[in-house]
Amino acid sequence: MQTRLMVVATLVVSLLMSGLTFWAVNTIQQDARLNDTRYGRDLGLLLSADVAPLVAKHDYAGLAEFSRRFYSRSSSVRYLLYADEEGNIFYGIPYSESQVDNALTLRRRIQLPENYANTAEGPMVRQHSTPDGPVADVFVPLIYENKYLGVLAAGINPNPAVVASSGLTRDVAIAVFISIWIMVILGGVMNAITITKPIKELVVGVKNIASGNFKQRIDLPFGGELGELISSFNEMAERLASYEEQNVEELTAEKAKLDTLMSTIADGAILLDTDMRVILVNPTARHLFSWENIDVVGENALHCLPASVCTELTRPLFLTAAGESEGGEFRVTLEEPTSRTVRLLLTKVLDQNREKPKGIAITVQDITREVELNEAKSQFISNVSHELRTPLFNIKSFIETLHDYGEDLSEVQRLEFLDTANRETDRLTRLVNDVLDLSRLESGKLYQFEPVDLHQTVEQILRTYQLNARDKGIELVQEIQPNLPPVLGNYDLLLQVFANLVGNALKFTLNKGKVTIRAYLPESETDNLRPQVRIEVADTGIGIAPEDQAAIFGRFVRVENRVHTLEGTGLGLSIVSNIIEKHRSCIHVTSEVGAGTTFWFDLPACCPELAASHGLPTEHIPLEAKLISFDQHVAN
Image (cartoon, rainbow, N blue to C red; front, top):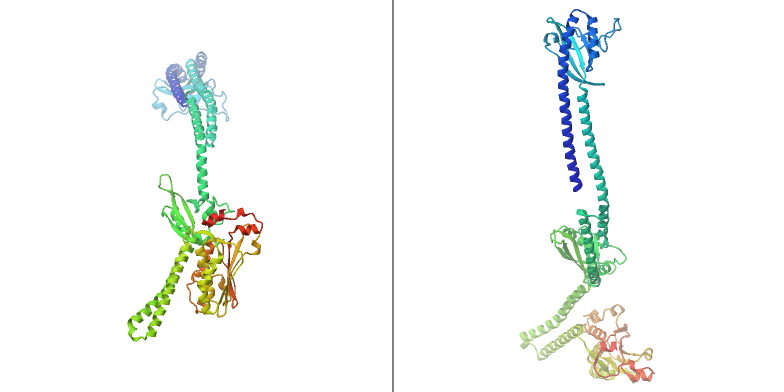
């Protein structure tokens, strides 16, 4: 600012001084010209009065003599020229016409205005410049006895003192002007050199601050505004450094929390800008879209997402980025690498003023299990409805028949109808009980487990089904290994497993067949610290085809439906499978059509005597006979 003010002030002063100087020089020159004009006019009139008689008499010798004396005595006369009436020069000093006339002689003349002889009333003066300096030309008509004889032209030199004075003044003014500007330029250069260094230091410091180097300081001995600027810069850098030290750990911790949250949430998260470039993606989204080995950050999301997702989201993404839509929810099925269903939630991300869209957040939820459960739920409800409809329809039909036509029916028919309704009621009761049992097993209820004596359980099952087996002519036997240790399980649940397996075996075994319940300790388990007891239910029935064996543990799956000869709810084996899973085991089947079927599973033994008989440490086997949960047992 000071430099600019100094330059402007200098410019104004120099222009003012130069203007005044040149005005003075111009005034002096104008006065000199005016004086020269007056002097030339007077001198011309005086000279013309003296030479006019000589010209009238054609006394050119006298004219020449007089003119030479006059020219030699006056230093202010540059030249003298005499011309006749037509303007032809016949004599001049310091040059004249040639004394010998010939064809090559050059004739010089003065170009006078037209009718100059008739209109000339006095001298005519003009100023012009020559290589030897300015000259005042004076043209005086030669008139003698009122007769125009020609014209006298005299060149008058300007006053040398005035010329020298005006030249000196002009030179001094130019010198002063140049000197002032030289001083201004030197001062500006020195000032610029002085200011350039701190400015460069400030530029370097600002760049370092912008790059995050808050330790940058400027140490230059300057005062005034520049010193205040340097001091303010150092103070700013000090505050930024202090702020960084105080907040960098907090910011790092917050970033770590955000990264941890993004990496641990179960849903996938993708953040896009308005140009569809990926800004952020968490590991869940990478896994869902198979991006583990692909760097998608910075890439166009529509080039990276699966084709099915792009087809569904292209238009909504552009509408959301343009601010024409708030987002939406979409469900897409992914085929690779495995078939799964995902729910995509689009959310518009606004700027800090919540006016313009800055990006799009995509939440990806894997709802494959949810879809499967919904389908299973729908299928379950459909199956239950179908299974309930048949016995209810039969019961209603027979009761309506008894109600409407009871008097027309015989006693035997009425008893038959009542017996059918009773059997359908029992069937409906079994179906409801099975559904309740299956629902209870799948509800996540925690069952308590304790040592269970398989001898007692098998004996109770034999007593329950012995009469049924005898009526069908089927041999029902047990093969329990002597000194078999108890198993860890739930007595009631295991009793239900045996009931379902034995009931199915009796149902599908023909007359003179055999159903066997086995329980033994496999030889491979005798050296194990935690031996398993193998339990088998085998029959000599019709068997199960290989293509049906994988599906028999599903709900409402009945092999007899293929031949439509036997009744059942189709839930028995599903209940068995769930109970065995509660015992952390798995049910297996081995079957051959026409030869029979064997269902088997393993349960953990609970007997210290067995371990001692095999020389194993007993502290690894639960010895308490109190109720314990299966989870606690596994933890021990």
